[in-house]
Image 1 (cartoon, rainbow, N blue to C red):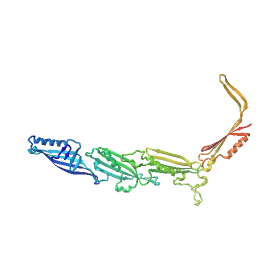
Image 2: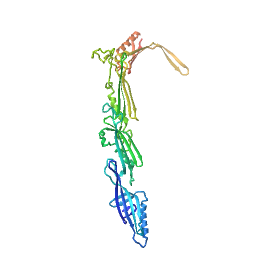
Image 3: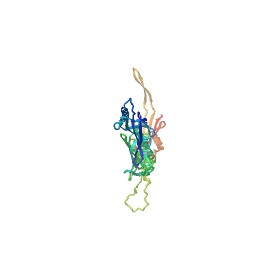
Image 4: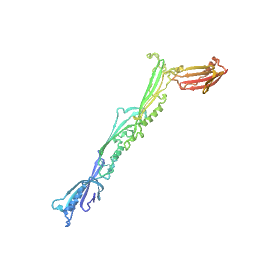
Length: 473
């Protein structure tokens, strides 16, 4: 038998072991220690060459010194324990005179870690040195959890799952013990739902908050998750607005707006605490839902608000008109609705996207054509005398008259402008414009003219035609 540097094989000793287990509130074994008590006596024979009492005192003094070292020592007790242990108490008793001269009694109490414990729901092992642990789980129904369900992707229905784990560790003779390893293990096991709340276990889970508080060898882990039975990775608020005015200048406006709040993927709470936002971005999840909204409501035909139209009657208070005689939709007054506003605002920090899609018009399609304007510009440059300038260094400028005139030049420009709310693309330039050019040439007695420039410029709201002629003599 070996206790540190002292070999007790020659001593008369008895070793006993006691196992103390730590349990959770639910009765599961989460850890424990092994207490070893070694009781014995040192006996020295009658040797004429030495003083027996002195030999007893020396051996007892060595045993007492073991208790003065707080460090763990190597212990080998055949059949009971072999490994590192810590001395808790050492007592000696020399007995009454004269027995102490040849005999001295001692007792050594050791504490050693357990080698293993039964499997538990916390996945804790004996090497984690946990002495106390408690865990709680709850489901909350916030005030706004009953938000609408537009469909399985556009929704705002959820509950909040909150878990809290408290534990304390007391490592004994474990130089490689790390509290962070225990925190990581319990963090990954802190997202389970209590069996009594199992009806929510099939819900989609998204991270909300996580905190770890450490004090010495104790820690508290808190996590919150958002649980939703639907597939969307973000909360969506959708608003539909339909404004319509009647009268001489009827107008219509339809708006789709909303806010998308991205949710944090549950794997953001990994075993090491928190992953980077680049791995699980709330904005990325908001973007995935926004792309579905954009494709679904990109066209006014997909506007899904509830419309309430007034009957277009001269006197809406007259109720003596037979049902079915009045058509609500007058095709001659249907407004021309075109995209008028589109805004998208993103917040990377909050993981939100605010958007507005608007279609509107202030005129009818039929009246839009009445606001097409056409401007004609004619610039006639009469023949001018031609001169040539010769620059002579050191002398000056010599002007030479060529005794001739240049050709007559005619510049014609036709600009057609269309209204802002034109239905469809601008029509191509009309043939009447060419007729107008021929009429202008004839009016100003421009004959035998050569076309030297002919350009056509088209924009979203205008068409410009430029032509240049020179008149031959």
